[in-house]
Every structure is written in C-alpha cells, then in structure tokens.
Image (cartoon, rainbow, N blue to C red; front, side, top):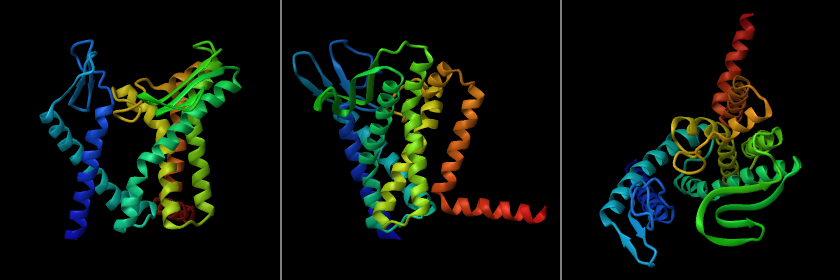
Length: 285
C-alpha cells in the first residue's frame, strides 16, 4: 500500500511539473496588463513576453502553479486508479495504470480531431467550404504545418449563413460526431474482446467522446470553458440545435438519454446492477 502511494505521488509530481510547464505555452487572455505584452501560465501567469522579444519569468507563480497542478493531478489519478478504472474493468496494476494515464493527452488530441472533423464534414455536406482547420499547434488544412499559437481546435467554414439551419448543423456536427464515435466504440467493446492495453485506450477514447457533448453544453453556461480550462466559452451544440429548430427541452433530454446509455455500456458493473434491478421488477409484475 505504501509503495502504491509513493508511486501515485511520483506520478502526480510528474504530471504537476508537466502541466505547469505546458501552461507556459498557453496565452492567459484573462490577464489584465500591458496590451503589448503576452501573458502565459495558468492559473497564475509565470511567463511574460514583450514586443522586443524579451521574456520575464515569475518563479513564485510557477511554484504556486506547480502546487495547484500537483494537487489536481493527485486527486484525478487517485480517482482514476481507485474508482473509475475498476468500474470500467481496466486493470489497475501500476504499469497499466500509468500507461492509461499517459494516453489521456494523445487520445484527447485524437478526439479533438474527430470533433473538428465533424464540423468540417457536416459543414461541407450542408454546402459550405472548409478554409482552415487547426488542432493544438498543428494546422491540418489548407496544408499540414506547425503553428506558433496554441488552439485547442478551430475549423473555419465559409458559405453558410450564421443563424441558418445549415449553420446550426455545422455547429452541432462537432459534438454529435464525437458522440456517434463514442457509441460505435462502446458497441465494439461490448461485442469484442481486446487486450488490456487496447481495451484501456478504446475505453478512454470512448469516454472522451461521451463527455464532449454534455461538457460543451453545460460548462460554458456556468462560466467555464468546454473542457473546464480549455476550449470554447459558448454552448456551441446548444446554439446549433436552436438554429436547427430543436427545442431546448428536447435537446437536453437527448443529451441525458445518450449520456446515460453510454455510461451503462462503458461501466459494466453499473450495467449489471441496472439489469438485475429490471429483472427483479419484472418478476414482481
């Protein structure tokens, strides 16, 4: 038990340092300061660049950021190891656990691409033309390139009128595509057996797809971003659904039903409990 805790602390330490350093590349646009300067770091700014090319570093803010991300990382890793992974039927051996934890960022980028591809696909189907696509630091279209500025995901479509049903389909298409992919992965996992590594990767990818739609609808409405700290600040899927003419209550019911269905598919123990309860109710009838 002690060795497991030490390993968990070491993993959280590594994640905390990595996250603190990584935020030094993300511009903190909420920072109030000299307009000519750019501020980087989250939640506190620890790197400041000016127009003349000079860079200032705030060591104290970096240390405080590290403490923040260390605590967050420890709590998240503890939750994954002791609760989520066992519920998903994923092996909780230290080796498999670290492998699964390390997959979150690359698989997140994959699902982010699926989301942006959904915008491009549905926007094109509705008569628009894709002019630009970027994931993180990678420009995907019109040509593959590395960009100096980080964007979680950006797809630009021309030829669609804002507020029209066609534009609504394009907006909704991002999260709906990730939701569809999540359902496909869930059904594949239900019917096919994989090794621990492949199963862990597919389940994590599917869960990211499942969370995309409800997170994008709920979080921006309570003052957060799509993925709490990163992503859009408006409920994009909800806005798209309204443009199409879908009533809010109908859309919310759909999100709840889809998310609940996916949870049952991905969480085997919960699914078995629900089925057992349904069988017990049927016997009573």
